[in-house]
Amino acid sequence: MERKKQPQHLAKYLDKKGRPLVAVTGMGMVTSLGCGKDENWSKLTSGVSGIRHIARFPTEGLRTAIAGTVDSVPSSSPTAAGRTKSMAAVAATEALTEAGLSQCDFPGPLFLATPPAEIEWPQRRRIYEAAQGSADHGYRRLIAAARAGNFEDIAEENQFVSVADYLAGHFGTKGLPYSVSTACASGATAIQLGVEAIRRGEASAALCIGTDSSVQLEALVRFSLLSALSTRNETPQTASRPFSRGREGFVMAEGAGALVLEDLQAAVQRGATILGLVRGCGEMADDYHRTRSKPDGSAIIGAMRRAIDDACIAPADIDHVNAHGTSTPENDKMEFLSLSAVLGEHLQQTPVSSNKSMIGHTLSAAGAIEAVISLLTIQNGLIPPTINCDEQDPEITMDVVPGVARAARVRNVLSNSFGFGGQNACLVLGAYDASNA
Image (cartoon, rainbow, N blue to C red; front, side, top):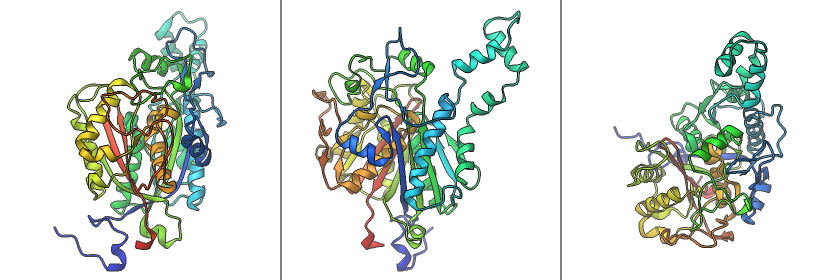
């Protein structure tokens, strides 16, 4: 069915497929480098690392004792869920302030990327010790104590929807909040859901947040057992080494990124400052393995191609790639091979850098945080570097912006997010030209 031709004065607010253009009018972020866009941008472009020794819990006997922890955001609860909630609130407040919107009556829905909820050891201990004198021991005693006692606070905090419910109430978002957990692609998925809601006309605005505070003992041990983590405990700042010959694992980190998305026409009409556009989104599932990508890279290639096509641009229009770039041997090589297939010869002229070299891997929050950084790159004409790549892997022959930030005219950024379980999501963030609107 042929799309109805739009009046000329409205066509400038639509993309080449006749869909509403989606504007970004507010952004906020929290990482191990600090709170707020200004502090993070200054340190990112200066090549500063936020990786440090873990002080939150004992690390004696662990293979990995480093992470990109956020220690500057007060939390009402010492749990991962509490920190996840607090970081999201800080990032969202910054985004709403920049957008010039109410911090208690947001005009659209909430799309939240958050990690799976789970009870931590201090909470388990509290439940277990409540059954003093029980004849049962171990797991049976824990279950019996949980059934017999009143632990509503623990139950409420550890529901998957608890973070989204709190944020929806705090910021007054409309409708039921959406919680998504697509592993390390979650942040990009939350943005994609917001974009799709605006394109379908279901909302004129969306609050999209990615937040994660998974740096807790059990999660660290699990990733360590997968041999996925760096063990460079002696020099934490050099541990995350994307695309380097000496890379040997990623560094767990935490943080939050928030974006206010709006229908471009509505945003312009209310006089909002347009920070950029979310031009395209692409996803494709990989059914090969729980932690590894298909050897042919078909799902990663498909996700990138879909995002570029959705943005109504050509591969040659990509000026910069904000890489997934985790610093694991296989992932970095797979991303290079996939980019080679998608961008072809254009890859050799395209700078590709990894924010994770400085902030670590923020897991569920990564896609949102890196979308914010991508838009800051466009705004400032400055590409953050990939640090710690003193000796680049000779099999990864692309420009990784090693060591030092680079001035460049950037109009379109491809931001990649690839997660365990075959979750792959890519975004194309673009510049906004006010002279055309």
